[in-house]
Image 1 (tube, rainbow, N blue to C red):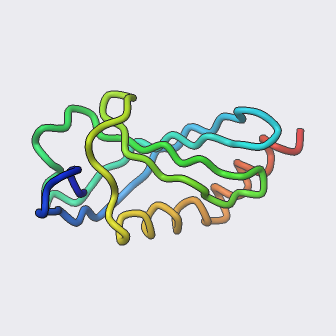
Image 2: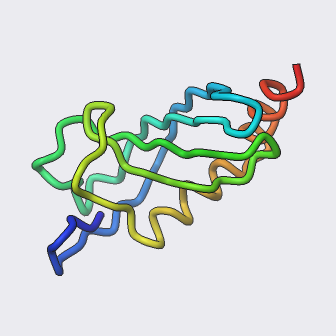
Amino acid sequence: MIKYGDDQFTELKFVSFEPRVERRNEHWVDVYLKFETDPAPPAPTDLIELTALVVCTPAGAPIEIEPLDEGCDCEYQFTFSEKEQIKAYIGSDRMQQSISSLCCD
């Protein structure tokens, strides 16, 4: 996690994900992720409820990955490695099937 304006960062490792997939419109699918992180290193202490919003195409390609705190924008961004972990999860067969079934009904 990188806090805007700060030169220090924390590299979180995600150990599990809990997704909620919603079709926004014909162009976008929103995937809200709750997750559990490895305790070392810990998430920033000034975050209350860290989650993520992943905006995807109907084909399941992640376009935007944003951290949320209590469901709202926050002053953090994910590191490259954290985004890669989230992209890998979104690209999993299970998630691709969830997105595809929602978009093709």
